[in-house]
Structures are given as C-alpha cells and as structure tokens.
Image (tube, rainbow, N blue to C red; front, side):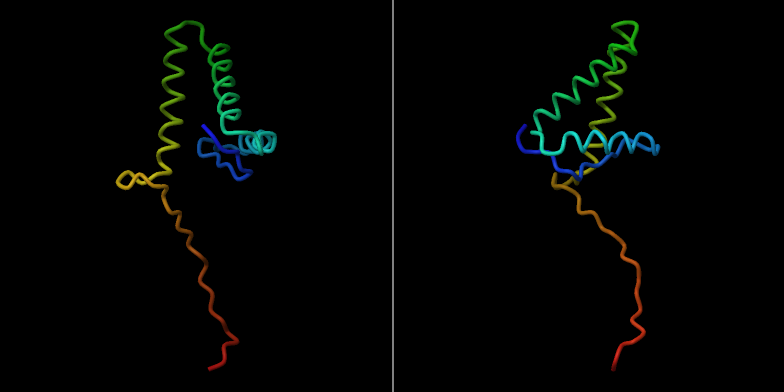
Amino acid sequence: MQGRMQDRMQDPLLTGPADQEFFRRVCREMNGASTQTVGNVAVNLLVNAVRQAATSRKTAESLIDFLFARAKSAALDQYDAVTGKPRVIMVDMPFHVEKNRVG
C-alpha cells in the first residue's frame, strides 16, 4: 500500500453520531499518515478488539470473518461491478428558478 491518507475519509460502516464523531477524531489524527501506517493501525485495532471480545478461537475466527466481510462489502460497493472503476457519485442539485432573469 502506498499513498497518504486524505482528510476526507468516509465512514460507510458507522451510523450513530457518537461513532461518527469518534471516526472524525481518528481521521484527524491519521491525516497525512501513509496508507500502510493507517492499515497497520486499523488491523492492530481489530486484532485487539477481537482478542478482548472473543473467549475462544472459534468465536475470534467468526468475529474476524464477520468484520472483514463487512469491510470488504463496504469497500467494494465503491466500485462498479462491471468496469471495476470507482463509481461516479451523482448528487441531485436543488432546482433553482432565477426570478430576475432578463429576456
């Protein structure tokens, strides 16, 4: 992995306001770090979370499978399945009628 993290990382897996705020704080800390450094930190966080949550190897493996399946789906949803290229995000702009138009 190469490159540097940008300050516009997205949080496709987070839904609650507290999670989103925590994610924004982590992003600020990682802004400018290499992609490899961010990946290493993310994996270390996952390993430690699994280690603390799982009471057996079987439970740990299930949790890892679940987390990585979720991560894979979220990441691949950003790419077109046919072309393999990043999806173009279309934004519906609000319709505006110019009332002071001459002509």
